[in-house]
Image 1 (spheres, rainbow, N blue to C red):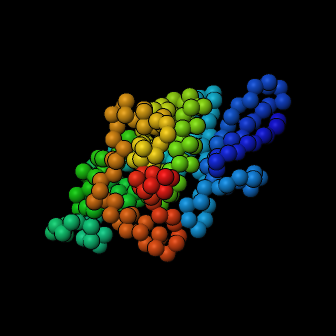
Image 2: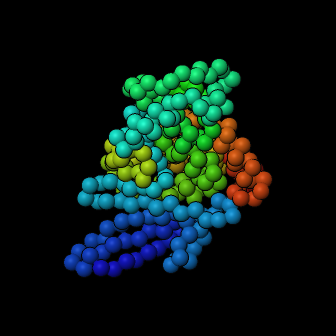
Image 3: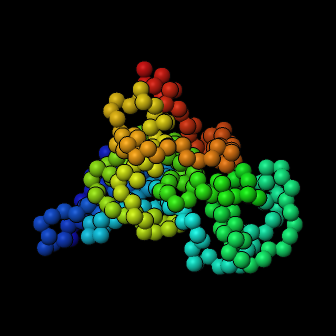
Length: 269
């Protein structure tokens, strides 16, 4: 077999060719620095970030690492009932993140309702670090579950810092790989999802870049508009902790500052 690679704008593509096969099959595409290639990596701050996607041609599956996730409505079987019930207890975290409401102190009974509450609290803490309301998590959980999304942490601390490179990477994947399902490294998998679902998850990039800054309509903007999916699907109150963390990391020089589409336009002019 032979491995060949080419790279441009921080994106690397590798091809696998079997000795008895006259066709090349693209198997993976990375976004970020490569030790074997000479090109500009994706630097979001003091260090590089690498994201890799694989395409399995036979099953038409896209495999990703941290690019997108799908949070299931029900807790997966791999999470024990003990962990779910422990998360359902009204402990210190719930008291601090209850929007000032009185937190009742009552024993947690083992039932499906409390297990579900524990799962919802787990998810919100994983996604937002400090969600706005752990006492009543259902409203925020509903907005974040049962859809293909970019993790709020990855969106805020990584992808929002280099939106041009991320959009090029996303558009190239959607253009070249006709996948019908996605297998993320986290939460549920496999997910029945098409290229339009994948692009819609990244529609926030067009908001960051700004319509006037973009010289051509991106695939993500066109398809997400056709599908009627809102780009800003993160509850604003839940994003406050992440936004504060982002501001702190920017202040100490750990990550780049997120620049709005308007300021990008002014800089380009």
